[in-house]
Length: 224
Image (cartoon, rainbow, N blue to C red; front, side):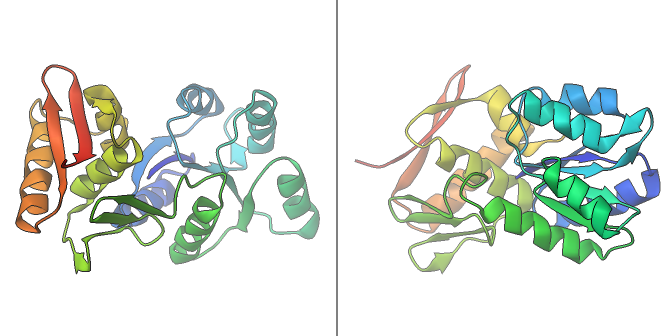
């Protein structure tokens, strides 16, 4: 899952980013309304965490612009004020959830999972291709009843390929699913993740294979 974090307090942003990464989420962090507008334009993200008080304006004004432009991505608003009127203005303004500071990072993670479980936000609770299963809510993959022990980036590669099963996924699209804006990407990093993932699927006796479409990307499908 890919999260856009709009937060100008760098210490808090660092703590939130680290926590979300531990829960297999790719985090793109921006600090201003202008950068947030640009980052959300491509609708790359599964959810947005938006601080209400930002340099240059109110996060709710930005949220209203997003909704007016048709952005349907779930948004959780963060604010230093938890008064009822503030919460209502946030929810009425297009937020899917509202969280007052200070809060436990674990609560934000739980709320993100909740909005991502909603039908509009989550394409499928359980993705299935042959004997391969991926549970989006719990971030778990298995072959039949056997769990797959996959590190975060391999899990993200698998999820992206399973969501587009039977279709070629371009390298650029896979890298967007696996890496954040600020991540340094080595030229062969994606190929390494795919190679390790392919080997683990084979070792587990999976009836799904990952094809390399040379110079284009990858394709996941069930073996005939």
